[in-house]
Amino acid sequence: MANVVFKDIRKTAKITLPSFPESEIEIYEDLLFGQMKSISECKGSDIERGLLVLEYLIKDWNFVNEKEEKIVINEKTLSSFPLKDLTILMEKANSVFDEFLKKNKESSKKQ
Image 1 (cartoon, rainbow, N blue to C red):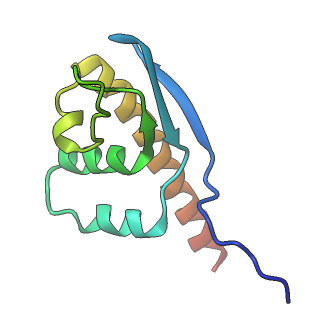
Image 2 (spheres, rainbow, N blue to C red):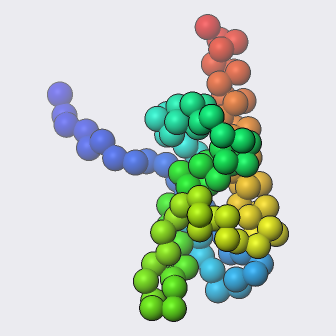
């Protein structure tokens, strides 16, 4: 039996935010099982769950502070974005979550 390297095989997409035309955000196209488990266990509001989804979905970005240090991808940082930009990110998160629910429903019907 051959060895198989276990690694993150999720595909990514890149988007730019309207308020930051030079921005480049690399987003995973789906979530890992453990991430979905954490989201479902989140006791916060829908907004807090949405920000958690974004934390998991954003693989990387080119945002830095004045000292050229990369800005951490977390709830605090995401909450600092203009609403129109966060809405674009949330729409992406919603489409990923909707796809997950659709696949979940389909697999439940097959069983």
